[in-house]
Length: 229
Image 1 (cartoon, helix red, strand yellow):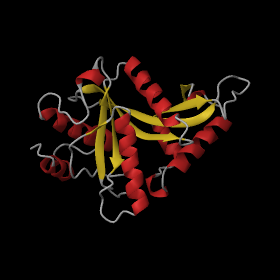
Image 2 (tube, rainbow, N blue to C red):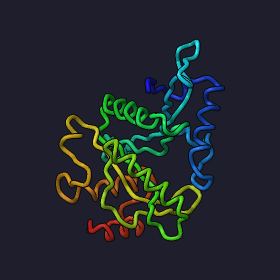
Image 3 (cartoon, rainbow, N blue to C red):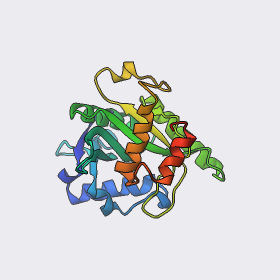
Image 4 (cartoon, rainbow, N blue to C red):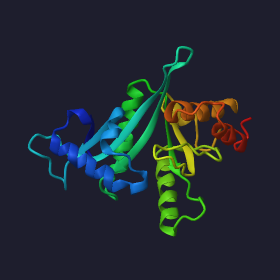
């Protein structure tokens, strides 16, 4: 599918509402934050022809979105910009048409060109007790989709970052290196460098995505369960 990635801020009101509809239709209510609250982060929108027909302005219509946040430690004694970007939401408006794969390629190319070195995100754990069968299948399919596009499921256990509504779903942590030669040098399922690299990933995501410091019991529990302490 031919399309292009644009900033949400470049779209008119009608297209913004179309993006809102994609977002609200892609996730269950318990995982949705108010759309306006998302705009503190960077929303990138994938535009493509609708049913093979481009609009008169040639821009296409919104068919997918990616909400991202650069992981920057702004504390006076912090490490500054990690070079990593966290993917908060990723959604295609229609399945089975290659939109998700095309959007992923555009997103990773954009971030790589901007000098970002790693994309990080979390996914729902299909092995969480009590899940309905259709949710288990949905969660497994999502992981396979990301792995097919180069994502790595990291060996992190008891990963329970708090969410804005106070609940802590059981999640898994994934990433994809974006630097030069990353695809060839880091294969899915392999460790790169010393084990402390994975610990740094866990602590950084907790701290800079969820605001939970490394000495918090939640983080310590994850590190211990993952064999990182």
